[in-house]
Length: 222
Image (cartoon, rainbow, N blue to C red; front, top):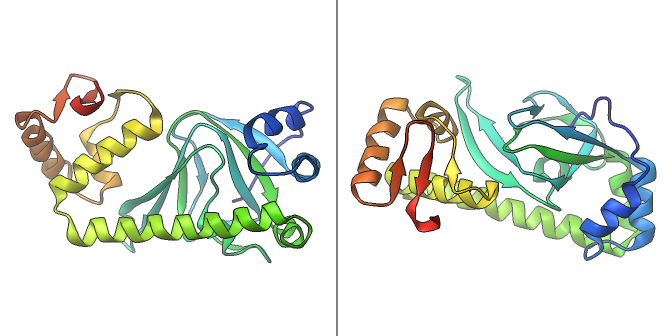
C-alpha cells in the first residue's frame, strides 16, 4: 500500500511489543518502529485503490480492513478482512519491489496501521526467522481465504452468501448491531439492492436476523 504522511510514534516499541510479542522478537519489533510508520484512520477510509503503486506493507494494529476486488465495470466483491496482526496477501506477493495494486482496501472500523517499506520485507526474510514464518503463514492463510471466497461465490446461493457475510461482519467488527444499508451489502456481495432487500426479508422471516430502521442484528449473536 502507499503510506502517505505516516509518522514515527515514540511509544511504538511498547505498543507493538504488547500487540505482537507472540509473533516477533524484540529486535524485529524495534526494526519495525525504526523503519516503518503508523497512522490512524476513520471507518470507511480508502487505504488503497486498484492501480495504485504498492510501496508499503500494512500490518493491522487495531481495527479491521476489508479487501475488495473490482471487475471491469467497477463492481466490487469482498475477498476477506484484515484484523489484528494481519497483512495483505497482495502486498506479500510483491515484497521485492514496488508494483501496482490489484485490490481495493477500505477500513471496516476505525483502525491503526503500521506501514513497512516493501524493500524491508525481503531483508527481514533473511535476518529474522519469525518474520519469515509470519510472511509464509500469512500468505498461505490469505490464499486459503481467497479460495474460500471463490468457493462461496461459486457453490453457495446468494441467501447463504448473505448470511455468511452478516455473520462474518459481526465477528470482525465485534458489534452485534450492524449499521449498514442494503446498498452497501449489495456492493460488497456484487449483487443488487433489490435482491439483497428481498433476501434480508427472507432471513428475517426465517428468524435469523432482525431488521431495524438503522441497523441489523444477527440473532445468533444476540
